[in-house]
Length: 100
Image (cartoon, rainbow, N blue to C red; front, side, top):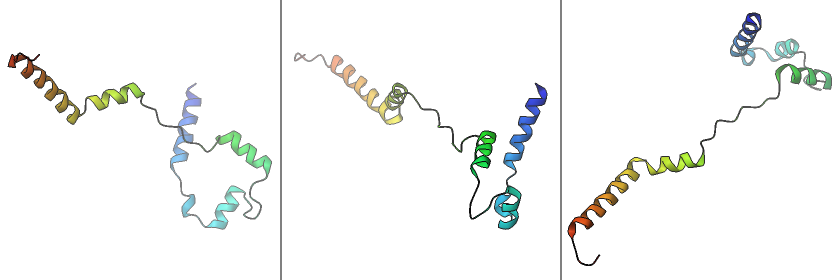
């Protein structure tokens, strides 16, 4: 289990050390084994897909809609409005007017 974790750690380190953009194009094509006119053949493309997976980013976590709603109700300006509403009701109750 430790060997698998170490191998994964080394693979991640290799992914971080990217210098392909600095290499001469012909050297890079030779190192990767790619023909610039024809590209990869289907066997190589399938092998690379199996080795590295699809070229996709994981989507970011979505905030639930009810939490977004609560965040809107508790923003600074919203809290000022809530406080004003509470003070308005308190003032109306204290006023003691007969037109309730």
